[in-house]
Length: 424
Image (tube, rainbow, N blue to C red):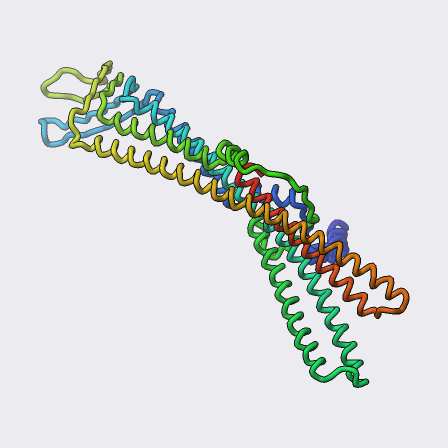
């Protein structure tokens, strides 16, 4: 009874704080978000299952290296054929081992190993794409929250301007049209603020989906926009991409697997050799024409050579299909190399553009800092009003947001460039 009372006391004491934590959301740093995505993202989990399946396919192919053992048992009762009904029991055990199968076994094992490398490359590709998408979504959410805060400040400032104009209207200092223009501006700012709230919510939903979190979980991203400018050389990056990109490894492995498929198809028209051992045991109740009764055991050892001489050109058609698959893989590999070069070039140009925008944003910051300093001094001397000072502060805040937006563009471009080179 005391335990039950204690349980309810704990629930009533801590439930409000738990609910408050749910309303406030969960704070996540970028590294934590990436770690959760690598662990729980469904695209990555699906590719990981493909890797497991490819491993099992290797084990399946290796099974052909071992002998097979089959057991068969039967019982029959023959009635009405002989003067006396006859019942018969028989068992058979067969041990069979392929010694040569036209290279099919070896090439099948190697083909499955190559396809395992393909699945690993696809998993690495999914990880790279997920990391890039999560980083972009994370920074987009930070920027969206910043934009919401900026619009809230603009909304507050616009309301202050409208209130001041309405006070001056009563004294005849401003006209009715001025009031109407300010009211229209306020309506536009309110609409922009609402749109920024929706944009932030949409960005949060995208990040939730990438992290496989419940839709009602509110993520609060922790972090600031920071960057370290660096010089990049396109040719070096392209060579690095050709070595590191998982797509290159994928098609190199697929090319090897397709070559193995050609040899596997050719093996259907090659001889095969297998050794076998059969053990028979049977019992007949009685026979009118044989004195033998009871169980009889014997075994047969054999070596079988088989060579299909003509199959209606089925093997030829299979080989040609495998050759077509190889050519398609080679064409896709060339296309992927071209796509990587284009992706890298676009990321390189985006990075250069973002760098130039950063310089312009930093110049604006200096300008608005000086303006805030000047109006602060005028306000302290009574030359400028409180509203003038708020306008200057707001303009400086807009310039800061523009700088953060430029840093956001730079970070996204840098991450895209890193992903294009095969590293994140």
